[in-house]
Length: 178
Image (tube, rainbow, N blue to C red; front, side):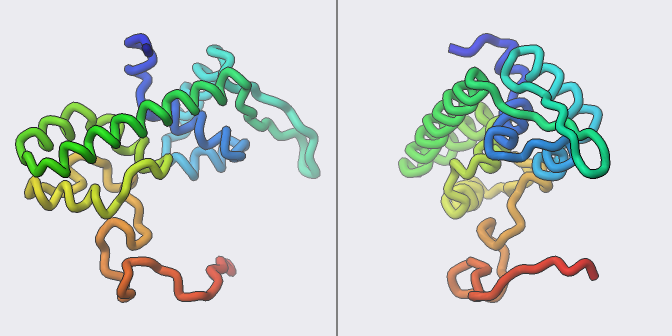
């Protein structure tokens, strides 16, 4: 069972820890991936390092020294435990949705509001079902999740012109800097 302090730190700490576990090691890339402000990210990284969940390693590079973050074994276990807890929460939310009880669904979404962006970040939730939950409640997804946390890849109910809601046109996506 997590203590209150862990729950208060909430989704941002586990999102940062998960990003590092999945190979995003430099501050700028972590910030870009997590969309967390520099000042907040610095505090989160400090807390994670103080809790021995990550370690900062200085590496020599072509343009000078770089600091990279690595997840410790303790940090890796923490991510796995928290993702399992989030998966369990999502399964409970899904079961309530399947009952069709609108009021119970609203109550459950309110109780789990702080975990929704984390579920999205880790790919735990089924975005189609998630958008249908909001439709059932007659609410907008942005009432529960910050707009910057909502995927903009066609899975969130946006119309991108394809029949199946995906963006796979068989081509490659290159950023050539224009």
